[in-house]
Amino acid sequence: EEDAGARAFLSQAHGMLPADGAGGPGYMFYTPPSQKNDAAMYGKTLGDSAAFYYTNGLKQPGAIQAATAGAMSNAERNKLAGAVVNVVGGAALLATGPAIAATVPGLVTSTATACTINPTACTSAAGVGGIVSGSMDMAGQIFLTRNIRPGQTAMATVSGAILTPLGMNAGAYGNAVFGSVNAIANAQFQNILYGDTNSLLGAATLGYGFGSFGSKVGSRAQKSLTSLFPTYVNSSVPALLQKPSMTAPLIGVGVGNVAQGLGSSVTPPQKQKNDKN
Image: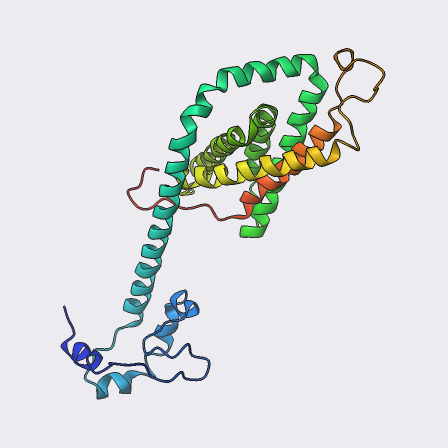
């Protein structure tokens, strides 16, 4: 139902009023972010503004109406933000996902071969990936909620240990997709075990971005360390007869996992009502 008195009053507001102290940039009906995030503040001042409403023939909203309006506004903003994330994530996955998926069989084979040749390095990579992934997830929980979920950290540790050896042979795009897979698995695990409402597509988007970022950071770290930790130590012996040193690659893996794990400190997008993803 339209408030005729309110319409008549607002029709007189043709320009801007001067700013009142630090109240804002001077727009008559500008609402700063602090007020948008605390709709309850309006309920605290309803008594003080009663005379204003009465004098101008306006209907004064109640505290519940003010809080409800604020909640609806926040919900709409979150919905719009989630839609933007889903569009970007969907486009990225559609563009690169099929190409990476086609290389998975060869990637698994090459990783298995590498682990057969140098099982110690493969085990070390899995250990580094698991420890760093679990630690970064735990740090992200503390940063966001000041609380630690042991099950969530355990899941991050296991998925990091499994995907890290594969990621060493996957390149930037492959690690981006693995980042998406890892994020989806962890988000769905949290939804099932803790009743969270994480958006899987939103998680995939964050995982894709941080997976690519971690791969690039790790690769640069490895290249910069190669001079200190050369792949083949003995220059007088043919490379084919030497077992390659994995020191630089393993350090690069650790640095890359730390960079990728920064995504744990970002609040994951939430599913909207009636949204299956």
